[in-house]
Amino acid sequence: MSALKEKLETDLSTAMKARDEVRTRTLRMALTAVKNEEVSGRQARTLSDDDVVKVLGREAKKRREAATAFADAGRAEQAQAERDENAVLEEYLPKQLGDAELAALVADAIAESGAAGPRAMGQVMKVVNPKVAGRAEGGRVAAEVRKQLGA
Image 1 (cartoon, rainbow, N blue to C red):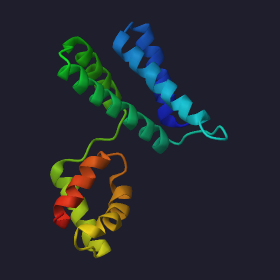
Image 2: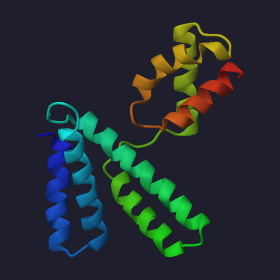
Image 3: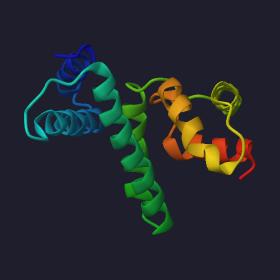
């Protein structure tokens, strides 16, 4: 079992004992998503910490999108609940890259791949994605690559 999954489980039992409803609800949801990922596909498998981080990242993204949708629909209470859940998930994710750090990584990837022009975006993404690995959303990375390639 991955160390991160173990931490989620111990934090869940602590939250349950403390009667922290938001944290309990969020950690249950996160563990369910992790377990679903473990049994998805043809064969059950144990997830590594990196895989668990990817699952948590997906869940955090869902919470951000839901909060925006609820806020746009004028449902402030539900939007706040989604933001609260997202805050709990963010504690388990790696620190997100700042704009300057992301720009530097993309610039290095462009230099490393020797890419030029918008058609080389795929080459640059192949180089930069492993370096970013969960510390920035794909859309944000793609936008920075496009910007630097002059697309």
